[in-house]
Image (cartoon, rainbow, N blue to C red; front, side, top):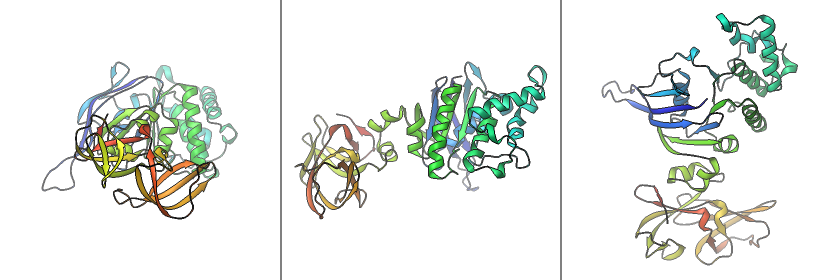
Length: 363
């Protein structure tokens, strides 16, 4: 089931009663989510991603715009009639019910032609329990399960009615690091096996990049970039997107373009043919540095040996952050002691942004 958002906007009353200024949580969101894809809504806290999910589910009504499931306008359809499955951060399981009873619960509200017998409900519950690999725990109650198992029960409960759209609101944030990694891999497997269009809200860019077909990067209610995760990483539209994606984060330096060259403190550090003279940000991914170069001067503070890679921790007087990181092959001869040295920069991993607008400068 494809999901289409047309000029979706949500405004909330401001906290300042005197000014009556509204807060725009989602601002003119236009997007078509393809059928059967897993799409991640990614951004910092307060960017509007959970509000967008609530608008799609029907938990919130839009101030403006429309939501379509396929060709059907569901903007004014109540949540219980939209055919969505919802999974939240806090699991929301019934503690007095067994795993089986929790999974069956949504089926008990079916009426008319959709009404099921007890045997049919048990069959469906077992079917989705096997899908999420909790069929051995059907008689247990939630308190007897681990956090990861409880989250699987919540997913099974959302899937048991075979929803048109599955909506996940930061479902992994309560899990420890190892469980989070395991469960996100399971989520991807389940989504692939069911083929259900899935929308996944997270502030963790590693989660989004690892499992999503498409990613929507948001800030302050505004969509900044949409695309495949690797495409966005390799080709950020603006400085915010470049800084938000990537672990370790991108290194950013102030400079200026003069006669087609990027100049930092009088040093010609990078070629920018055809770019007009202007103040710029030079941003370099950690893997974008070539050691033992001749153009980009820096001060090496220390090195960190990480098996196949070496991290060079360095400072630069024009860097936005006090400490910067370059990742190079362990085969490179990197001195242990601090000192001044030079990099060259890889063009595919180096970006220019306008100092005035923070938009990408292409060349």
